[in-house]
Image (cartoon, rainbow, N blue to C red; front, side, top):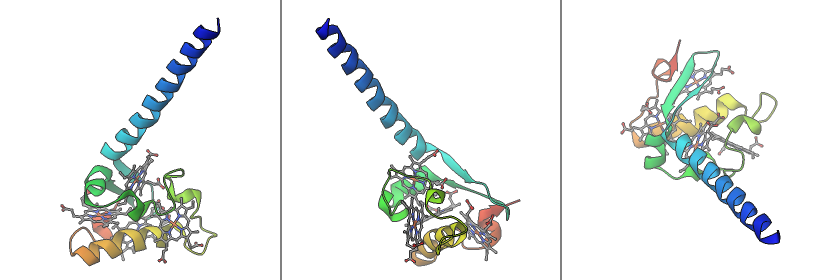
Length: 107
Ligand code: HEC
Ligand code: HEC
Ligand code: HEC
Ligand code: HEC
């Protein structure tokens, strides 16, 4: 009986790993669309993960990939400033990638 429980546990553990790994891969391939009252912003996550490290954007680690889990309208760095600084600063720095409002915000 114990043996079966152990095997069952292994299968569950393995499936969980696969699932976690899969969602990481999927996240990287996706076009992420950030909903925004000023116009939604879509960008290729994949293109960006090829360009730079995860930490460049997920500066607080990957346990909470959503920026809004920390950056809210009430915090010092609100979501708009967090994104504008992270995204636009790099585009300016690299002299490529959109920096004009309408190139990111699509109504
Ligand atoms: C150019 C910045 C940038 C880079 C580089 C980046 N990410 Fe992201 N990632 C984002 C943004 C922005 C979101 C959406 C966050 C939100 O909804 O608040 C996101 C979302 C995610 C999500 C959640 C996806 C979902 O559908 O909820 C995961 C998981 C993730 N990223 C993993 C990674 C990993 C792993 C890497 C490195 C291989 C990486 N990211 C590199 C910006 C980036
Ligand atoms: C686990 C919490 C957490 C998450 C998740 C998080 N941040 Fe932050 N971030 C902080 C804290 C704390 C600061 C320091 C300023 C403050 O207290 O608001 C900060 C500061 C920043 C700054 C300002 C840095 C500077 O030099 O002025 C930027 C830009 C930023 N975050 C972008 C992002 C982006 C983009 C994401 C999502 C990809 C993200 N953050 C996710 C906690 C977080
Ligand atoms: C570390 C640097 C860096 C960061 C951070 C970064 N970008 Fe970019 N981005 C680039 C570069 C470089 C290109 C041009 C790539 C090319 O044309 O080959 C680009 C291209 C783009 C494009 C056009 C291609 C596409 O994905 O559709 C969009 C839109 C974009 N970025 C949005 C964003 C957004 C939104 C953020 C913040 C969440 C962000 N970027 C953060 C470097 C960065
Ligand atoms: C590199 C892409 C990019 C560029 C360029 C850009 N933005 Fe944004 N902006 C974003 C992202 C990403 C967000 C955060 C969306 C969210 O709340 O999830 C944002 C948020 C905002 C918000 C906050 C809306 C809300 O619901 O709180 C306003 C307003 C805004 N941008 C205006 C502008 C203006 C004006 C310009 C030109 C001067 C501009 N943006 C240029 C990507 C960009």
